[in-house]
Image (cartoon, rainbow, N blue to C red; front, side, top):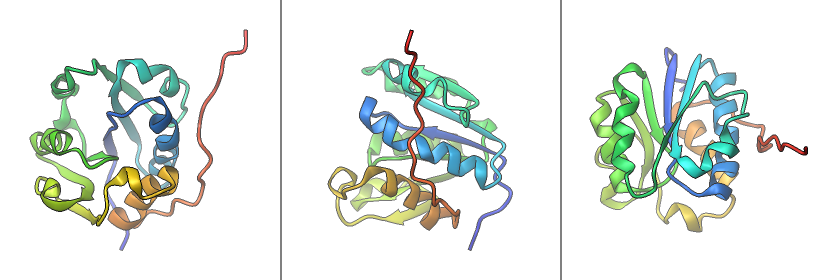
Length: 157
């Protein structure tokens, strides 16, 4: 069943450059399914991968060893907060949001989530990360996420 009424979403994706590129279709899927505002919290060195993605409204960069800075993004403004991996510390950040929280339920790490997508194996070992991230939206929210094309614009000056 498709969830309605999600107007704003905060995606927390504290991963490295390749993972950020492979998760880029998630932002398009959110917008194509009616989410008006899509903001992303990511490591500061990943901003160049994200900054020209037309489906992202705001990027909140954090330093790698100061992930807790993500709290400054103002979670309470969002109808949905989600993460694209199985990190317990990120799930705790979602818990602080006090909103709908979407993520993978892997072992005990999914306890803070309100929308749990079951996961028997760790995310990194499941295979195609693009499809895996889109499946989170399809299974958790009922969204149609067929376009797996990654989004990246390179400056070739």
